[in-house]
Length: 106
Image (cartoon, rainbow, N blue to C red; front, side, top):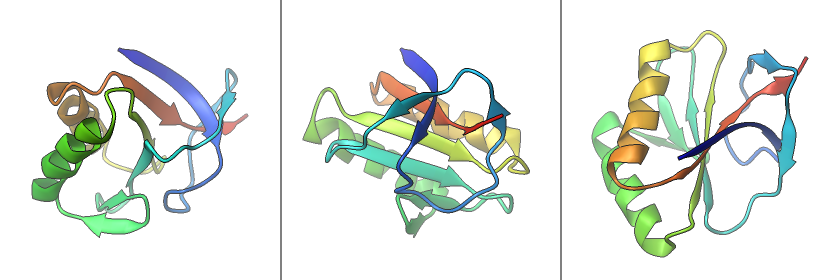
């Protein structure tokens, strides 16, 4: 599994991201999806609101698009930590290995 702190073009929701000193830039591609976890706990697939139940189905479809699909997880700094972990766990469960955590540079 590859997890990195990244600063990318925003294809997800506008959030107040936590900061990190070690930030690298990644360009989004067609096989790259951003999952946003809002402070309220709501989930968004790019900019489309999804339920927890839809998350696994979407992740499975992403895995079928390309074995090298990339998932960027961005959680608002006020988002429930457990919700962010659930997204990460669901991605690993379907076999997605290119996982990135989006942050802002401090």
